[in-house]
Length: 347
Image 1: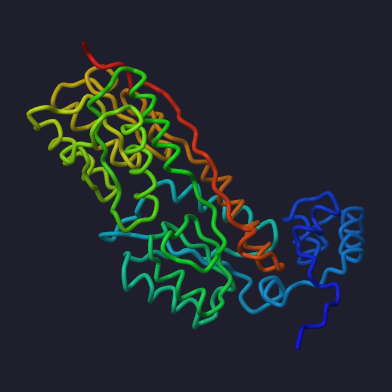
Image 2: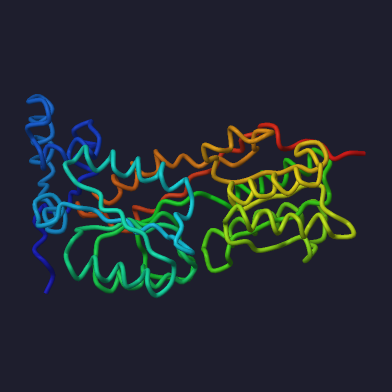
């Protein structure tokens, strides 16, 4: 028997559009009306009434329920905080949540079975009402678990081998590395190596594809000895760059799947007396704060982590307000930031 088609299908995004305010403002009206001016509050409530909006039960639970907390589990391989860009992402998440009266619970876990157990504990204990997933994998058991349990979540990244739709915000790593590789080709480089991320991570495949596609378009072969896999740490970037520089025909340019490995590459070049941007070009990915202060400053692909954190909050609230997962899937384009670590190859 079909459900009663009463006007409850308007979601929080439509109310925001109708009232001419942000999703966060609508959430404040519903959650903490005293924090909103009377005029704005009246405009939002009138828009909600016109649309027949009733908060989704999941949304009500988040705003009025037991926890009023959103959780995020940060991957911490080998017991270390995985990457400094998480700090900027967390700042955006925390800022966005605080504006709607919600708290952010942050914990860390090594990737693998322990990480899934951490999610299960958070869900079973009802300590959080929604989750933000970081660093997605091609077949991500965390996503499978949360979909099965019908737990509200949004992911920072896609998961290519999961068919059921889920909300995500991702950066187009393929386009980014295609752009970076084309830039090096335009400078005259033909010997370009790639230091990638662990293959099980979803973004690793996309970033590698961008590099491969640019080489193929230029009619250049893909040399297996110039495509290496790191663990996203500075040390792995250092060790793999040393290996590349020790080849009979070393590359003239290095593309690194993140800035930390690019920092390791810069250290390896310094130890060999090579100048980044002159003898060997290096381009990273993320644009972490340290990228501004290396010698030379690191050329990289920029991800707006703070803005992404805020947008993930808006998407989670929209999901809880009734928006379908298919309408909460966004891919942003990274910006190539050229500083001092890239240049034409030596003749």
